[in-house]
Amino acid sequence: MQTIAPLWLWATFGVIVLASLFIDFVVLRKQGSQDIGVKEALNWSLVWIALSFLFNGLFWWAIKDTTGSTELANTKSLEFLTGYLIEKSLAVDNIFVFLLIFTYFAVPSHFQKRVLMIGIIGAIVLRTVMILVGGWLLAEFHWILYLFGAFLVLTGLKMWWAAGKEPNLDDNPALKLLRKLIPVSKDYDGENFWTLENGKKVATPLFMVICLIALTDVIFAVDSIPAIFAITNDPFIVLTSNVFAILGLRAMYFLLASVASKFHLLNYGLAVILIFIGTKMCLIDIYKIPVHFSLGVVVAILAITMWLSVRTAKPEVR
Image 1: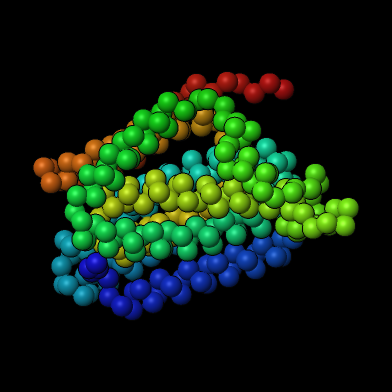
Image 2: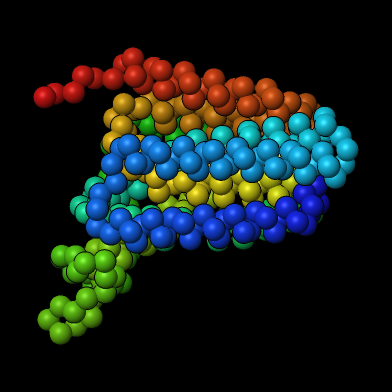
């Protein structure tokens, strides 16, 4: 696996991620059981987005300084931006699933923050491993690109078919299996994952939530990582765009949770994006779609979908 990023930029990225997680944990601890408001969630979302753009600027400067080529720096930074936007878009669908899980288990909002932080750390570790493995596979077996592309197209078609339908966790096979294997208490015990019931140690509903969040991380990593490999095969860009999209997930969750009903058509847009990216990957040896065109298509699809969602939203019943 070859990357254009210098070693010091890898180290800088690692420091930024660790510092960001530390700051998020400190903020989380100071908030305690306090609920996160829309304004605070919006402000933090903007902070994480700004941090991603600043890093992309540093990436552009590092490539230009290392290679002396402004054109190459522009191309690579555009690849990062496109990958970041795609991963951020797919994270929205991830958030809707989190919202479904929290609603199903009636998780109090002040417990949700801790679960989301654990989910973010798990997603970063999982995606790092999968990206490294995926990069090695693509380097050794080029034909896997076609497999990834076909998988994305099928996933997009499935997402389109499922959009607008009410998901039901009662039919989730993973949840059914967990309930058979692990005794679960009826009530929460603070933020504990285990509690005592009739003298026996049993799992709390919060433990079930953590297990389903972890399963969701796996499913969405399988979907999103092939999508970014359609934009670039540089492991640094793939990893950094993924991680920066995940870092703001907690704030974005509380922001979108309050306006989720207004973007009821968003899943259709995400489905079209996956189909487009999968097609791009399948055509890579016939015609390589320019990165700036891919970015334009993704932005246009998201903008149109969100606009149509707002236009067709049903008025709230008061």
